[in-house]
Image (cartoon, rainbow, N blue to C red):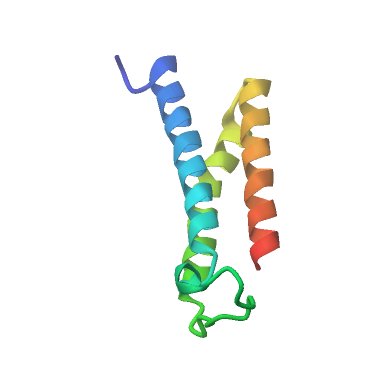
Length: 101
């Protein structure tokens, strides 16, 4: 199987989609307060806040890093289905980024 074959490129696209889904799930997990697991359910939501913003920056960089290949798929793909999947994933990334920041 040569690197230019259709199966090879489809494998890279699937890997890009899977990495995007994993990163989106990871961004939802990491976007909360790092001390959320310590809080009782009846406590108010103020909690302890991360003043450094390292988690937010990491999640934002992660979303941008996995959105770039999706954008390249939208530009380079000939299939409208592939473009649609990438556009939906980019919309999810935009929604996560907009809702968190």
